[in-house]
Amino acid sequence: MLVLHHTDKDSRNYRGHSEIARAIDNVLIAVKDKKASNEHKTVVNVRKPKSRHGANNEDLLAFEFGSKTEMDKFFFLKR
Image (cartoon, rainbow, N blue to C red; front, side, top):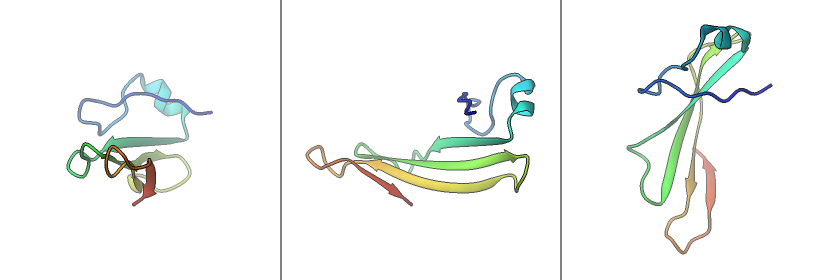
């Protein structure tokens, strides 16, 4: 099962009732990297603050997507 939910204002922690967090095995938080993103690309960092069966507070991956210019094709890259 996948549950999508919002984070707090700082995008550091999940928000909502604590029952949600207790029922979920893994929590992933995706945050836009505002310094690395620009008008043509968006960079997103994904971390795992909670894992019932593994390490917590891991940076899992970073990816970027967009186009180099308005005329270029869409791209999606793992960083």
